[in-house]
Each structure stands twice: as structure tokens, then as C-alpha cells.
Amino acid sequence: MNSSIRLTLFLLLLLVILIFGLVVGRQVYMVGGQEPEPAPELADLNTYVYDQPRELVEFTLTNEQGETVTRESLRGRWTFAFVGYTNCPDICPAAMANLRRTDQLLSPELPQPDYLLVTADPDHDTPDKLKAYTDFFGDNFHGLTGDLDTLRSLAKSLNAVFIHRDVEGELLVDHSGHFALLNPDGKLAAVLQPPHKPEDLAEAFERIYEWARENRERLSS
Image 1 (cartoon, one colour):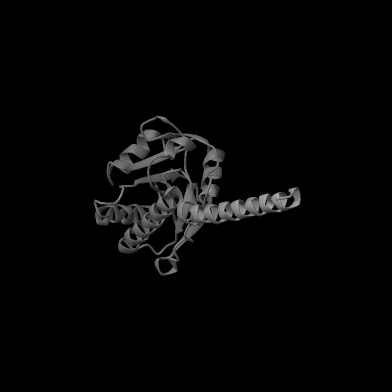
Image 2 (image 1 turned 135 degrees about the horizontal axis):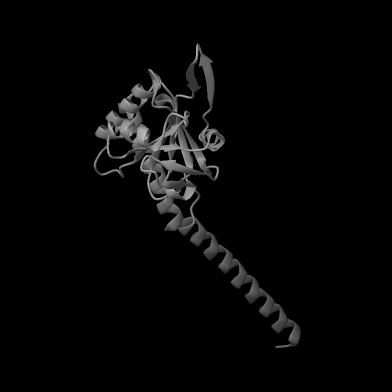
């Protein structure tokens, strides 16, 4: 066998090995590195789910226990966050009651979320005031207070806003009425718009959780 034939055979062997490697690699990718499923469509539940959860702004605030809370503190669990204030005459009490009822409706097989009131009135909502307010709704209800600009920044990253108005010497706060759902990475996973029905909130949470769990398993398998 002359040298040209040996070279040709060698090149053909390399080509076969290359093709085999590409086929095997593609199969490994298809099985073990599958594309994530797109976010569920939950418009019928007044809910928008992000395909890619959004990072929150960095912040340092104080909770109802007087403890320092940062963005990292929100990791490790699901959280329903709501921007409001304890002197709110109507929207906030109704929203908190809806969250309490939602909590009661959740299956015990699901991770039990926290519920977080981000105050829009830090001058009035001290840690003690927040504790007295949130304790009424349950042990897993918490509050955040602190610097006004920091609270505005956090609210913005939750897709929320609030505006202070002085009406005959009384402070009134106009604020967003939606719930922001944070995933265990502390990122914004979904926005749940009013009107809120506890049954719909519980269903939306379950469907978002199952979608996130299945995607995590697909990407790690």
C-alpha cells in the first residue's frame, strides 16, 4: 500500500471519528442539556410569567424584627411581595387578606412562601409598626422599611411605583396594587395583577412552581 492510499484512509478515518463525535455530542445535548420550556401563559389568572426571571436591585433595608435585610436575604424560598403601607385605608388590608387566604389554600406538598410588605411610608412604618401589622396576618408575613429612595428603587424593580400626596395635612400614598412573585434565587419570576382571587393566586403559584421545577430538572438531567 503506497503512502497516498494510507493518507487517504487515515483522512477518512478521521472524518468518521469526527462525524461520530458530533452525533454523540448532539444526543448528549438533546438528552442532558435540553432547552427550557417557555413560561406558562397565565393571562386567564391575571398573571405574567417571565421566561428569564429578573434580578432585583441591590438594597439594604430593615425588617419588622429590626434586622438588616439585603437582596441576598430573599434567596432560598418563594416570596409574594407587595408595595403598600400600614395606614392604607382599603387596598392594602384587602390585599393582605387575599394573601392570607391564598396561603390557606396552598397544597402542603408545595413549598410554603413568605409574604412581604414593602412599605411606601417609612416615616410612619417603623419595624414595630410593621410587626404589629404583619403579625395579624400570619407568621410568614413580614415587612420592610428604611430609606425612602431605597424603597422606591426596590419597588421599581418589583414593577411597582408609589407617590406621596398631602391632602389637607394628611399623607396619602398612591401605589401599585399587584403582587410580585420572587423565586428562590431572589429574582422576579412573575407579576400577578388585580383583581386578586385567592383561588387564582394559589393556582398561579402552583403552575409557576411546577414549571420552574420541571425546567430545573430538564437542565440538570
